[in-house]
Image 1 (cartoon, rainbow, N blue to C red):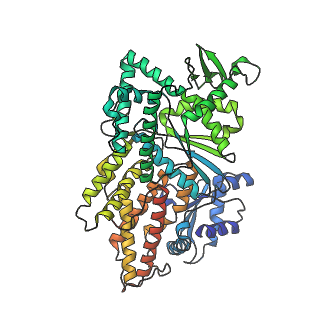
Image 2 (tube, rainbow, N blue to C red):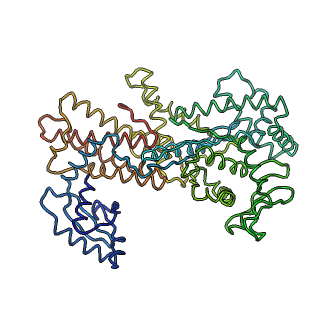
Image 3 (cartoon, rainbow, N blue to C red):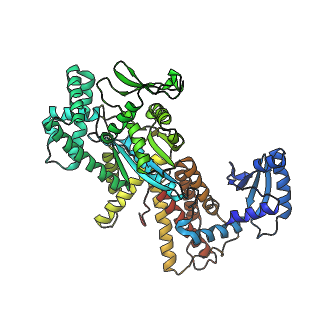
Length: 577
């Protein structure tokens, strides 16, 4: 609403271009900035000169204390606007009150379909913290894209075949106790993870074990060994059910689940159909070729920054690369209207995915501009990097449940029934992990500090939830006192909260366009701190105060923004804590 007013002011000053606003890097440089590059190009002038001229024209039109801006000033190629606090407060609160849950929503993705592929757990292995980061990032990104009007398809690609399964089955065969099915599903899944760790270590250290595991791997693909098939089927069922339990706790679901075993055959066909095939006449443009009885893709022939990778081994088995080819083709067949396929993986898979992407672009040029790869860093503890291969993994399931138990312990003195405690503890425990992940840029590594993550003070998910619950309690009190929110009963001086609330749509839009949830996470901390400062320095509910209804309206607006922002991060907002 207030931006519409700025657009009118700019149009009156002679600007007819499409207008995009940004936030200046420092608060003393104003509240909103308009870039003059397009205008300068049209006028064939220096952008800084155009900004100075435009600021001068607008400054002459600034009116009384009811005008939307108090000053327009040129900063290089930008015209920066200083907004009238009282007018801004009224317009922002009116807009939030009118739009409520729709505040911060945009239509930039309307008519576009995006498939987001995330999570990627491998059955017969533990769901480790790397998968947890992948899933939490993907879930938030899906919600942010949906909020921008995109039709989003959720896809999960799970490794149900390959050496990791053979290693797990070898470990289960060596230690029959790990096959005990009388335990709970959680313990059975944990035991399968332990068997994988044992098999993985043996594969590295023992040539005999390596040969046995390689043989099991062939039998898994051929499905010609009844006993191995039985162990496989049991392990598949147990780990898949364990994953579903985690998805439920984390509030995630999928439209499609693709399996490696299903993609392998498709990928093999693609590789063999393109074996010794040339893109054009020079031999250097060959796609797949034979090398030492294996089929490889020499990607460096097409891009010197890339390297050679094996797609079918000398034993005739498809590699991950081949399955990725099959997966990509299957995804575009599954949803032919897809405008973009986003894949989220760890940083360590970046180079491998570039090679696969190059192969796909040669075979299916129409897909090249419809594929986007997002990578995330590692998640570490004080002990360093955890890995299921070494058996020192901290599973996603154990991290979540242990964190929830810590929250329950802190809530022990609360006079709530046990069911309510458990429900809120789960919300807060999940929030602590999600926020700890989402506050950082996708590509960065994370050092997870459990005590800091569950604190209700400082930079944490529970702090955001507590701020929302505090505001909610203020509104309950105002309701009892019969003080209705009124954004027009503003005091002589407005607060920092209003200036931050108006930025929410811009922050959400940036998160959507850059595929980065951390902008929203960091913004929410900033606005929560501003609200808590407002709460600490003001008596909000006070019948003797003529501006109390404005303060209630501001609190009301804050709850809408905080709840919406938390939702975009995949975090629930409890009414009390």
